[in-house]
Figure 1 (cartoon, protein in one colour):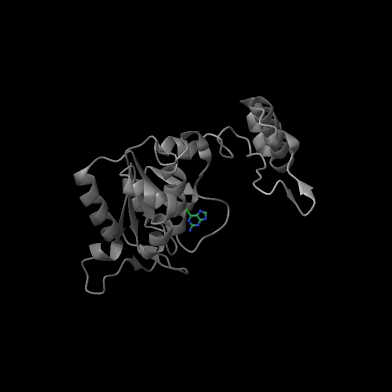
Figure 2 (cartoon, helix red, strand yellow):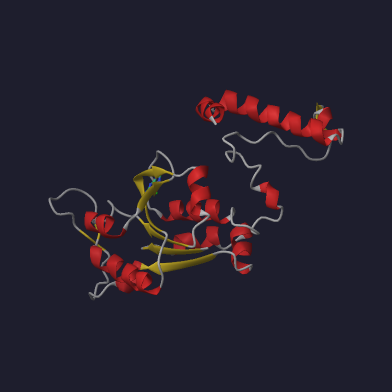
Length: 229
Ligand code: 6GU
């Protein structure tokens, strides 16, 4: 899968996408991430990527031309399954959307900044607007990194244990059960006996029950979704 990310601050994308699992995914050739600095697509001598809003008001607006130049270049090279704009106005990213995106080949992401992007860019190029939650970030780069990470780890072969993405929290609308490692007793707190029993079926049942209990208690909204299937 290939992501092309357009940004005014591509530096912000580097660290989260070039370590650990995302790095391995790219080294294995399962994931490609290309970043583009919109300043490189400007034609004026000040390399301006933003301008004052028509009608006045605070904040700057991302200009059409550099974005269009970069997108046109990319669109001439390949077709994209999705052109995402990261914005607090978008649909909230959840595991279902991550699963859907993980089945795509080419996804473009435009990182929002300042007061946002000229509306005509949204109308012309954007096929989906995505938010990562109900709070405001200073820019869309962290949101783009969240999208690439949460989608990239789902690609077949990225995780060592193929089944491990399937047992994640949210994958079946349930939170993950508690986990423990050695020592079996720490500060007089004992690991539940069933986990030391070696009885696989009982362990599975215990984990499933814990998932349900935890979801009911912490996320009644998810629990309702789980019950409805
Ligand atoms: Cl995608 N962008 C910004 N600026 N803030 C956000 C967001 C995105 N998602 C949640 N907050």
